[in-house]
Image (tube, rainbow, N blue to C red; front, top):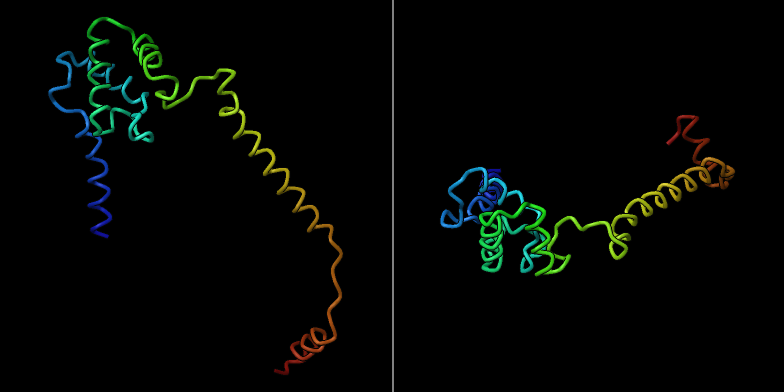
Length: 150
């Protein structure tokens, strides 16, 4: 129990350690925007972490680039567009809806609908199935149980 708690606390604190104090912007409003943008960008090294959570060197470089762009006056969307232009659509943790990514958005709903359809059909078939007769051995065991004999 104690080890699980320690592991959980360590995992929670690692995200806070990713952004180093030297990277932070002096203006809290700009820093907040930088953190928001960084959470939307994927670390291309780790791939399942945002650059805000990653300790990879490339993620650090990307965080600094985001802060430089925000400091230069770019909007959040302009920074995201710049990063996509530089690293490709893969850098976005939440992919945009485009003809090339439509399957990513539609596939989960289609698969869920198909799964529900299969489940409903299976349940209906089971409900409508004819009961099978007991074999002679099963009938004998049932009779013994009903009569109270072992």
